[in-house]
Length: 282
Ligand SMILES: [Zn+2]
Image (cartoon, rainbow, N blue to C red; front, side):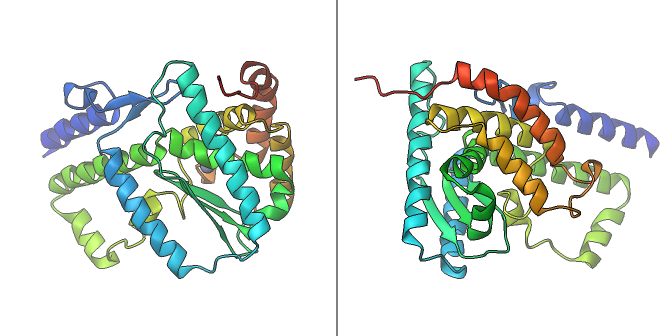
């Protein structure tokens, strides 16, 4: 029994330690710009297709704002960032990670939710609640740049791949434990929100991915011509808005606001110098 346990544990760890065994070596890629190693077991096209379907449902089931002026601003910022991302990768001779995206933007009428998200393939939503925190176009570009960065860096593909492995791991552990885990999950029921969670709608990304999205986000906003110094102010306002309610850092996968602000302050001067507004070459 313990021997089986050990073998499975080793197998599990091998799979988990990305790029350490032959089986998954082909499934590893690197994130754009940061070159962080990523695990990708699922085809991106599958996730994009599923995301598009969920986005369609979100549009049908949620109350969309009829503030056309505000939505136009969102679309304008979005298209500037879209263009900047494509031009940047072209300019460095790399394949544009958004070549297969079908960008779309919605403004959800909900003043209580201070959030925005971007699903795989460029399906974006901004909640009216976050507009009080973003305040101006540079602030909104900071938030949108961050969300777009999650999609450009294919964080959902990575997360879904890990979920796949976690399931495999659970099955292995389940065999070893004589089915105790599956008995538990039968009594607790099936997780129906798992699908949405995969796309980061009701669950934050992992801490590494959040930090990467912060970093890439300011790069993309800067390339698109926005003042990324506003990013720090946005997070300060976010901190103020959540005063007293912020979970301690060790409890969440999100970096705490203070830690996030400190990192951004360190990156901003360098990013402004290294990634100035990108111009069309023609
Ligand atoms: Zn994020």
